[in-house]
Image: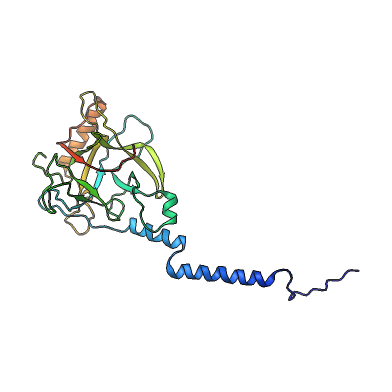
Length: 268
């Protein structure tokens, strides 16, 4: 009868090489962990930066100035062309490539844009109004002037928290949030953002082309002006707008004037 001549302490095969290989793998893991080079560490840093709370500029005079930090928001409006769509105010967000986001701890540019249901200012939806040419930081931004949107991570030109149109200078197309076209992004389901102008039967831009430069709220317990309770007059006006659109789906409100955004990378 054959007997097992090897006890549990007997090592066979290339056991010595396997031991050294495991030790090298552990040393490499510990070295990368100490240097913060592990994929999970780099992924966590990028996510922390993109979701880091930001402080918006407070508009005390009702104007937008070069250098202000704002959110670009697509105001909520009834969607009549699709059954499934995102409701509520959608803020413009930068959206890194999902694969690159897992492999890097820094934001790689250029990157895509999307519109998300985020009402608090964070790193990925807080933009700085940058000068185009000839302007200086602190100067009031007027309707019709060119400006750039940078990110780190009425007729009286008071554009703060009012509806405007943003037109891409090279294509003359309006910035739009397609609430019925969804993107599976690194942060979940969000709406597609593109450059396309939608006109109603009166040749007026539809509400889906409307945006607001949202500033911070003067109250310390609120993040943005969107958090301020609406006055009864504003609620009544919004109800009248909905009734008008139901009676005439092609009709829409006309924002005050156009603002142009040069060199803005939009998915076409």
